[in-house]
Length: 206
Image (cartoon, rainbow, N blue to C red; front, top):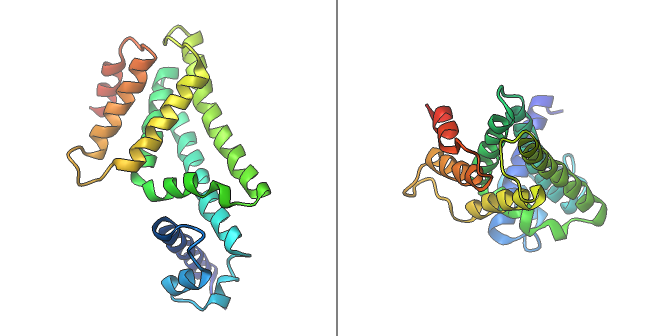
């Protein structure tokens, strides 16, 4: 019997190869036989780690949002006022979408492929993630540190910007990831009319 460490390694490899194939071929066109071959397993061995192809998709998509929620919480735990926390959360948000663009694409393109119950789980986690961003914006407005027109619309704007980045950013392009994150963070803080937006971002970069 495989050791727990090996089991975890194999399960992770299955999710990673499945994500790559779902991105390249699409969920519907990807077979479990192709996933198994990519990992070096027989198809039957996959069922030691998944219940079905739909379960595999949920593992991939659920893992994406779970990782994002974990990173968001780490950003929230940083010291500073509400603007500093918002800046840290935006940094995390933009960086994640740029670094894990393929998984982000799957998360957006294949949501419809999940069964209703599984889709609801993912949607609920996404809502929780967005609500944290919205709450920070609301708190910044109430503290008089930002000009908030509509916290929900600002949240949609910030989420959409990162989704857009996932579609075009290339590490070998004319901007480094750090430069991109700094620029889009400034865009977001300027949208909220944070008085010292540039200084806050520049101070974090120093």
